[in-house]
Length: 114
Image (cartoon, rainbow, N blue to C red):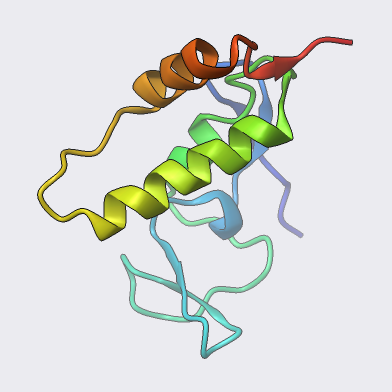
């Protein structure tokens, strides 16, 4: 029987070490099975190999420290990215620039305060 291993990311969130949280996982929309880009084979649930590396989204978990972003900001952010895709000669804005633009235009923080 395998023992489940956990690690913490930079924000102190406990991350289960398995193929689901690995940077090398790949999953096609056409195929429901996950594969390993490193080994080129199908992975099993809760499997952990020696090549495990935390993926970028998992590394960022907890970055906003539990704060909830406004729906208006998320809609605005999505629309900015859609507009950037249409404009091929425009340089994309950084996330920080989009946040500053939203706060300047609407006078609100991107976060909801409870």
